[in-house]
Each structure stands twice: as C-alpha cells, then as structure tokens.
Length: 211
Image 1 (spheres, rainbow, N blue to C red):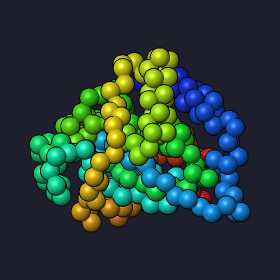
Image 2 (image 1 turned 90 degrees about the vertical axis):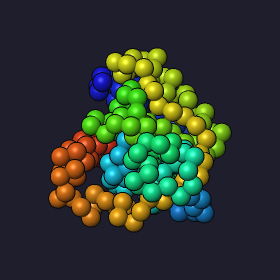
Image 3 (image 1 turned 90 degrees about the horizontal axis):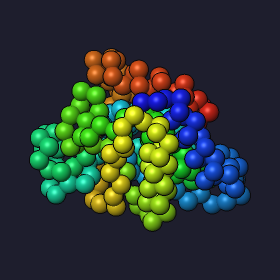
C-alpha cells in the first residue's frame, strides 16, 4: 500500500468534494436542528472497525453486526462459518453537520486494506470482506466516485475489491461484541491487532478525534 500517496489523494478527493461545505462539515451549527444519518461499513473484524469509528468526532453511536447475507437472525458462530453470506460490519449514526459522509469514507479507505479479497490480515473468509453498504443514492455516488479515483491514482499496489451495495437488513451482533475493544483491551487480539491499528488511526486523524 502506498500510504503517503493514499493520504494525499484522500485529502484531495475530500477537499474537492467538500470545499463548498467545509465549515458545515467540521463545525456544528447550533442554530440548526440536528438530523442524524446512518452509514454502514465492513472492513474485516468488526471489533477493529468499531474501535476506530467510536473515536470519530460527530459519530454518536456504533453498533457491530451482520449484513449482506441470506439467513435471518444469524449468530456469530453461523456467520463465522462463511455460509450465511453476511459480512461483519458496523452501523454508525453520525451528525453530518460535524462530519460528512465523504470524511467517513476517507477514514474507511485508510484504515484497512481494500485490495485483499475476503480477508484482512489473518482474518480470512467472506465475512471479513471489504464493503460499503449505502443507504442513499448520494452515498452510493460518493462511494463509487472515491473508489474510482483511488484506483485511477494508483494509491494501492493492487485494484480495490471493495463491494459497494445497497444496505439490507442489519442484524445487531451479540452483546459481548459491542464496545469490544474498550471492554477487553487486555485480550491478545486487542493488544496485538486492534491497539496498533487504533494508534495508527489516531495519529493520522488526530484532527477528527473526539476530545
């Protein structure tokens, strides 16, 4: 992954798309009624993705769950089998007057490897695929544009394989998966996988962190 090139391109894409609304995207307007919006992302183990987005200023809630499969009310064990078609994902609620969907996409693209099919690191299977589940036509448009620009720029050494598809039924994961990193920080997976990833994210996006 060409990290520096990716950081530069993400900045250019975001600035170009957000230039006219920069103030609105970064400073809440106290005179406006807040209308919260929803975004759904899959980028490997949802413990990692949840830990990252919980720290983003403007994101009010993050729920870990399953989406994109054929089985109703799947369990973690069933999803891990790879037979249900679901992806481990997070569904977040955010304030678009504080952080835009384009900025959320910027974080999404930079905090996982979107070029590896059905895997992130040692986590292998369709449940760990890279995916954006859009909720509106505008979200679809922005995701497809961003993906196209990143591919064209050569920001990654290989083509992006991220799935961009309409959001379907999102099933909340079992309670012990929610807020997993914050409650289990000393667990081996948290210490050796999530913690380094989270630290890297905080350094790259320190201007977008919650205080």
